[in-house]
Length: 208
Ligand code: CO
Image (cartoon, rainbow, N blue to C red; front, top):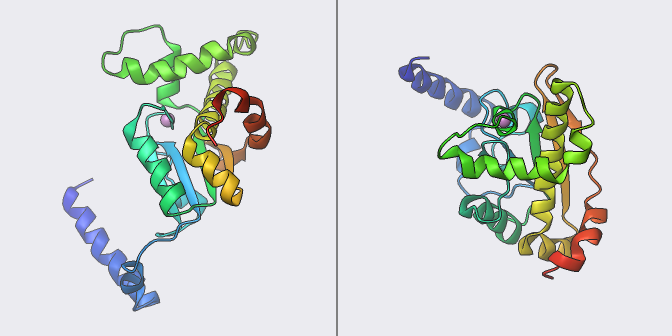
């Protein structure tokens, strides 16, 4: 794609939005009030807003390789803090996707330089769920299951934060774990019982 084409596309998009609503940008500049925090993968095939059918202003978005929520990552932690404490979103979504390159890389025993510390977080998910994963003989199924378990563990990482626990006590914020199926375009709800997880981990991770 030519970079110049992007500016032409942008011009058309501005005209299109203004044709629908002349105050579109004026209203948008007043501020944001999103309901959802979406944490997804940077993968170019997995769009955030487009596949959820939401427009500008509706979702606060954070994307990184393999939709991770590492507790020492200042970017992810700042996004959680700002969206839960200030924007007051009511839902946190962690969305993974099948055939995630980050998850695939973490499954290979290989030195990948600067990616090592990032992928380590996924390898840790593998270790936690080793017993279940090692019963799966089909490599493709194992790969898909690790994608799901990684989403689940990142939901747990959200639940462990002080901001989430405060927001849960204040207004019953919810956490959702989803997987985007690249083959069908469908979103799969993993139906993670976050309240049960919160209950189970409170003994150790309770901050509020
Ligand atoms: Co990915």
